[in-house]
Amino acid sequence: MGIGEIKEILNNCSIDELKVKVTEFENDERAGVVKLVESARKKIAAFEKEVERTYRMKEYERKYENCRYICGIDEVGRGPLAGPVVAAAVVLPKDVDIYYLNDSKQLSEKKREALYDEIMEKAVAVGIGFADEKLIDEINILQADYEAMRIALSKLSVKPDILLNDAVTIPGVDIKQESIIKGDAKSVSIAAASIVAKVTRDRFMVEMDKEYPGYGFASNKGYGSAAHIEAIKTIGPCKIHRRSFIGNFI
Image 1: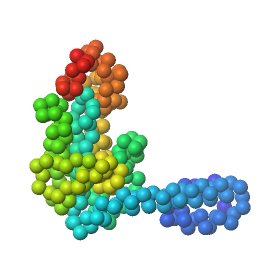
Image 2 (image 1 turned 180 degrees about the vertical axis):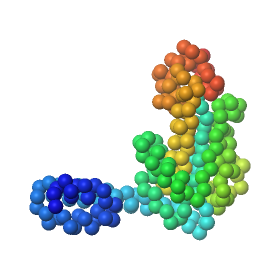
Image 3 (image 1 turned 45 degrees about the horizontal axis):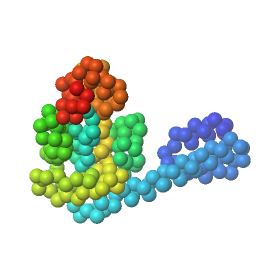
Image 4 (image 1 turned 60 degrees about the horizontal axis):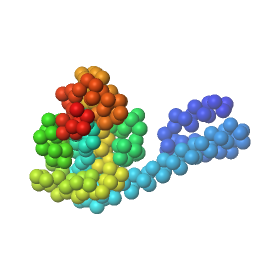
């Protein structure tokens, strides 16, 4: 078999298939095949490391394994000058393995999008809550944050038995909660919620860029980049700017 053919086979294998194929080619002494086998073994080792990391990220899910529905909650958008804060509540099946879940800020946009699709496909239930700029200005960002989370919970098709939250305790909720510092890096449920919230808000801000051009919302997502601040000073705020956040610029 030619080296090119072997490369094609190894590149298109699942991890389980790759483990088998490596043994088939490991005695081939051609330099090109040796390199391909070494690369495949590194890929297998990296995946096994990810399996171990994912297992560790299920610590809190194992803690509450007697609960039927475990819900992770997280939000994005506390810091921007424009747009809503968005919260997501995600209930994952207990027996599901979604690899590479992490704090959404630690993932590339491409990886977030791929994981978003996988989460939405496999989740038992997903709820998303928006708190817009008017509510943020009216009741402050923290209270708006809580409201977005409550809305997200209200949109779930099942009622959770336990909430795993990223470093907050949500007032006005009659479900047991556990607040986990840096929870989006310690719980698969919270990480999934972080990704869903981030992708949802980013997509919303891309749409807002079309409606309110000139501020760079598609790229800055409403955060205070130098170009965004200059646009506020030059053309003034638009409808979705948080007035309580931009007092220094207008």
